[in-house]
Image (tube, rainbow, N blue to C red; front, side, top):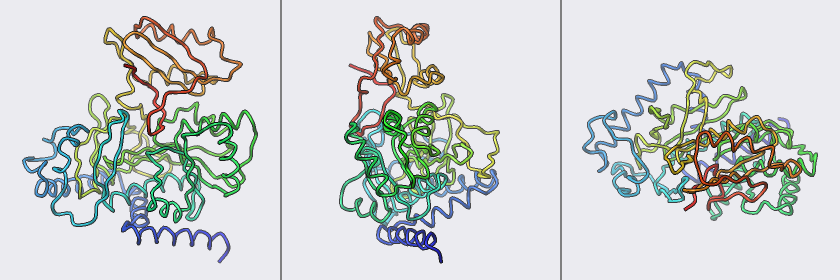
Length: 423
């Protein structure tokens, strides 16, 4: 047995240990997902529907919230506010395994507290592993997490989990040049093979590398961006700086949503984990088919999604293809006359301008401010006035302002928000 195989076997054993200690079945679930993605599309849909029917029966007979429901189709779309108000009513009385509290702040910053199960946790991690494997990950590889509170946890249990998974944590709360220099040194010294983190943070690090580089990462295989919309400009910037392929990963854990980008750069939704639909306004509505303890059905994720029903992917996966992740429903700019534009308008507006590395729109009842991260020698307002002219065709404010290379506004979880409304 060669050294590479021994290394991978040790990594595999470490994840087996995670499953044993945590009561999860990450490896078994990963194997199942990889088998199910090869099923014919009709069989996949039938499988998902069969699991939904089983879940609905459990929900109707064991939870207070669903006891009066007659069928899934008749359920109202579920919003976060309803879950917050009636939290205990979603718990199944028949579920006897241990459940784990989980919280998601979403874009509003108001936490949604719910319970997750070993099966649901296993499905989440299996989906993440599928995204890593596309980038070249093998069991035992060192992984760097570059993220905030939505990914990085710091209690003792999570520290043990990260140790066994061979994960190294890098906080995005301090991305000063001094800290980035330290991060880069540590990533190279610890032989990081995969970087997994926020697109905005990785874009910021890429800017630093391009300014001080080129800097080699001899052990790095690939980068996976998560938790935020990955624009093509940001992807190109990260690939140019790190000299490795960049992939996207998307999830909404309370809704059972896991999606990964394959080597042909198609985003596949793991439809055997969730039952999904898209309404007339492109809102993604989903049910976690693996959480039998805290049952959330027909949940409005807050994301706007467009699927590609026609394409057959060369990777042979029959998991549905997400054509566009257009952002969150809160990423909408509204002027005093009620005219609205989604943040995807600005993505399209700026995408061909390679000088714009990142943007943020901050608006109030009377003003619109456009924060642009550009090369300092390109921060000439006259070049960018054309964008204000275009925006004025759609939105009416008393004042419009371009702001160059100022710090972006952040929420507590350190995610980058493309659109922020001021009081």
